[in-house]
Structure formats: C-alpha cells, structure tokens
Amino acid sequence: MNGTLNKVMLIGHLGDEVKMHYFEGGNAIGRFPLATNESYTNKDGERITTTEWHNIVVRNKLAETCEKYLTKGDKIYCEGRIKTRQWTGEDGQTRYTTEIHVRDLTFLSNKREEGQGAQTAKPVAKPSPKQPERNTEDEADDLPF
Image (cartoon, rainbow, N blue to C red; front, side, top):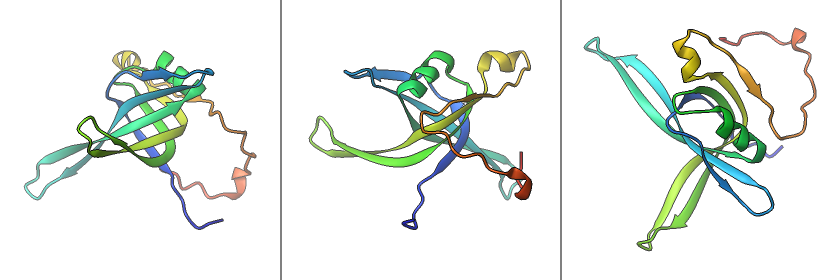
C-alpha cells in the first residue's frame, strides 16, 4: 500500500438532468451536478443552510443507468474519487475543474416518489469486479444509519 487514499462519499440531490456523451467503440460518459447541504445555527439563533455543488462523472453502463432512471431533484448516494482536470479555454487561459468520478451509486429516492411519500433505495451495480464478502458479525456496527 502506498499510504494514500482518494475516496469521496456524497448524499445529495441532482441539480440537473444527466448529460450524456457517447464515444466511438460504445463507451459513454454522463455528467450532472449534485447538491449537498449543510445546516447550522448561527450565534443569533438563525438557521443557516449552505449548498455545495459537485460535478459528478459516471461512465459506460452506470452512465446509461443514470440517464435512464435519474432526473433533476432525485436523491442519491455515491462513492468515487476526486479528479482535477485542466483545459485551455477559447480565450487561451488555462482552466481547471474538480470532478467526482463515481464508481458506486445508490438511488435513495426520486422526486415523483417523494410526492407520494415513498422512500425506495435501489442499489446500482458497479462495473468493477465483485468484492469478497466480509464477515460482518465480527465487526462493530457503529454506522449512524
């Protein structure tokens, strides 16, 4: 092990529809913004909520599944890694963007179901090889959910 870790876990709501781009050879990439909120009470007792926007990137089968089932406002859980990309803008300036390249994603709810009071979790299979099963009886269950 090289002693580093690049892992991101987010729960948030889609800020727009999934935008797809298809490549020769059948590969695909999907992009969408994800909003996460943080709330706190300031010293005056006011409830303050701040929103952080994340640029989500999904690939191939996962991208196609997201395009098919997700819509603006849907709530998801995703895991991936942070990547920074650079390019040259039309004005010749170097530009940077930070993205979350997602490998695992779970649908937590969709906007249509929330109006009906239903909460469903639909895990989405990741395209990576199957992980060995863990014996969870020996592990402490300190998860908050």
